[in-house]
Image (cartoon, helix red, strand yellow):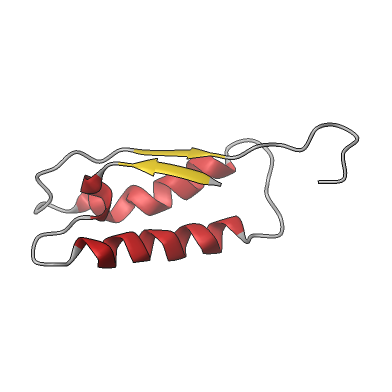
Length: 79
């Protein structure tokens, strides 16, 4: 899974940005390790969970953007 994001997602006033990046990395690792991936909108669900806290915060003056990308195995491949 590839995640592209703006600093508004991981930055909080008074908290080191590296802590936010680490939290996002761990959350993505957990989400990507899921054995069963429902068809359809599973990436949208992950994005909603990852952005929920930031969207509800009143002390985040910066924009929040997140793009998640994954690839599907080609039909007949062993991936």
